[in-house]
Image 1 (tube, helix red, strand yellow):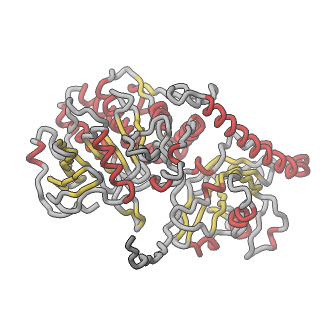
Image 2: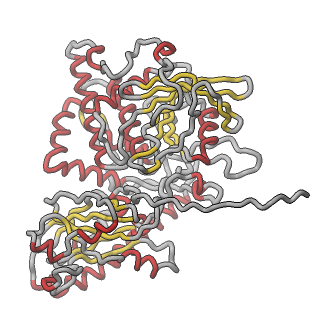
Image 3: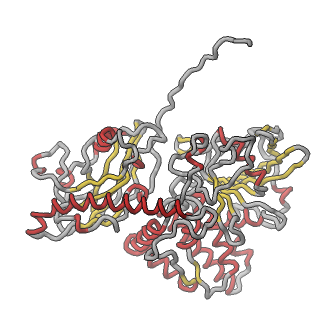
Length: 562
């Protein structure tokens, strides 16, 4: 056997990025579990998932903790670098500013020290912390002190984690209220708070184990019966179409208080399902994010290769739609090592349309690996498939590409639509533009198309889930009577039953309501006699009646700028 020179390799350490933005409901345990009995007139208890907060996907977390503010205050913005962690007010400065803004009740390196202490028990992640228990803080002008809070006052909390590249904070969470001043409360409050804090952790652990045990006993093939939510949790919030405009107006009142309440209700009703295939040793590297795993019961299964038990896995799930329980595939953005699997899924599932909702990079952070050929009319091999970019049209508000896929003597065309500018965890686009884009994409589907539409962003849950809601409710509003009802809550819950975290932030949830309101307003105008072409026309989009082969003109060589 020939033995050549040993291969040499170099290790390059990638620079850290800011921690991944996390939803506050993924960090903090529901306020329903955090009994008000744990509060005193100067303190309250918070319980949160420290393991999720310390997620090091974008680099090692070097600082993490909690900020507290009154519910009337504006949430803090993410600092540019980790040194800003110390610039947040301590208790003394916060009190002497009239309790304006936020302050840090957790000491420096608090969670990092706790992580080291728990290194022998890696599964432990639930943490409880008493806010407002230190005394004599009036003398600690420049030092940390977890000082007392004002009695009978409502507070919010924000979780912050930092790498060397900067810090990321969650949205504000909760309505933690201190009790009115009482002599009894002052004496025993601290004892009660500590006991209840332990009870919170034990209760949540028991609840999670009970749900896990229940899921193991259920039939994996029975999607409807898996992991039933407790019957006390509402699963539907129907809204009459005729009243929808006023309903949305009410939801916006008091700083969107009712929106926040409904969003928390949605989190409480959401149930996690098993994702055992996603965590197999051979599949872990196929997941872009460690907390976004494809559920087993709804995952898209690739045709297995040889005898590799992991060759059928891809981080993608079927999502029910208006006409089919598998109308959509929601997928993470491909990694370089999963690009071949991505195209294999498109071919095997007979996908006619791909909708991409993220750029390759956002704010210097890699969100997606380029999975298509860079050059026009330059076929590229992806496994057994040959993919060729044959047409590309960068328009004013989106980009269209057409790919030719070949496997042996069989060829197909797949249309690709890229909607730029949609920020992660956000809903910064105009709802009318997204509606028009979704209408145009849907108009490109043919009755002969056999497979589902594939939609992806980076993780395939936030922007993807929001877009699927828009597309779904376009069909609902078009086909319903004006006296009917729509239920955004139940459809988001249905999506979450098939893939975790679908619609990832409250802002995205509010955006869906605004988009549905716009759809209803357009339908009302149409019913009042206005012509449909005047309702749905958007000058930034290609007219629906245009000849498809003529509009996809080669206006640029090379890859589209994403």
